[in-house]
Amino acid sequence: MQLPREVIVGDDVLGKVGETCTRLGFSGSVLIVTDANVQSIGAAPAHASLQSSGFKVQEVLVEASSLPQVRQVEREIEKFKPSVVAGVGGGRDIDVAKLSSANKGIPFLSIPTAASHDGIASPVVSMKGYSKPYSFMAQAPIAIMADVGIIARAPIRMLASGCGDVVGKYTSVRDWRLAHRIKNEYYGDYAADLALMSARLVMRNAHIMKAMSETGIRTVVEALVSCGVAMSIAGSSRPCSGAEHLFSHALDVTAPHPALHGEQVGVGTIMCAYLHGANWQLIRDVLRRIGAPTSARELGIEDKHVIKALTIAHKIRPDRYTILGDKGLTKEAAERVAQVTGVVE
Ligand code: ZN
Image 1 (cartoon, rainbow, N blue to C red):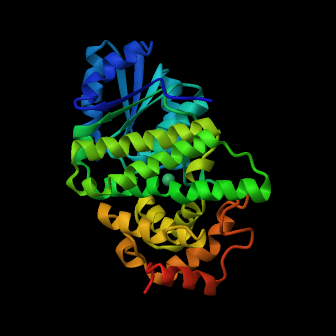
Image 2 (cartoon, rainbow, N blue to C red; image 1 turned 60 degrees about the horizontal axis):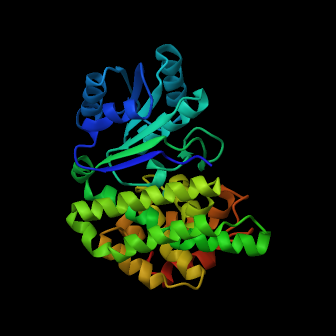
Image 3 (cartoon, protein in one colour; image 1 turned 60 degrees about the vertical axis):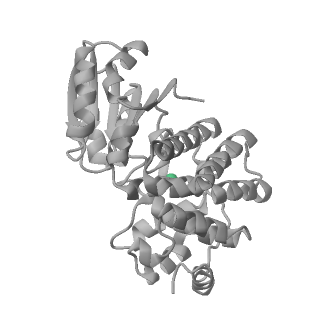
């Protein structure tokens, strides 16, 4: 079980990256993995802080979470021999930094500039270029440093997406229990409760998210970190990824222009809650209050792509048993669930 040693959430966190790396026992050089959009607001202050603590710093820019980018960063690691790799930015930066450092046996520091999904704290990566569009284990971050001031400057849509990812645990934990009962799959109460508690925390605070207040951002970041820890404890993404995630991964395949991960997961959660016979109206109302999408139209995706995604979701990852069962939904069943829940018209 790998767990983060430090979680720092607050103001001017980026100015403390250097002293934090020193405290964690690192020395010599640090490789920063970032992208052009966040280089000046995220990587630059982290870079300056590391330099003033005496570290040699190298930056590498990535454009996508893809295999070639992971290989590129691995080559930089071989050349530069950093003591730690820092991912500074959104999903792709964090994922590429996490996987390349894990492959090279170097610790990884997570410095998210948006609170849009639980990859900021989990040992899991989501990567394109592999045979299946889903996530797999890499390594947990040695520390997570979330600067509330920087995260507040990201579009509100990113925070709403993070909320959607957390609310998804309402059904992913139900799927896990189902797999335990039907397939005798290992089930861990502690990891499941941690994931569910995060979902409850975000649901209870749904009304404060639109204001992008410090309390709201802290709530989401802490919930995302708890989800990441739940996955570390379970040793897989099981507690945090059920049919609502399979639906989102399937939409990434069927929709020409997919929405954000957490936005799609949120809409998937409404429909999966319906299939579980749970309170799907509660999920829909919470997402509305947050300002997250609750329908295909709000996702900017045509109804037909949503229906198609529902019918193929069970094939994305056949080893992950969910409420969709081994055979998945028929087109008629998919249309019914999407219509009853108001996801399609
Ligand atoms: Zn997710």
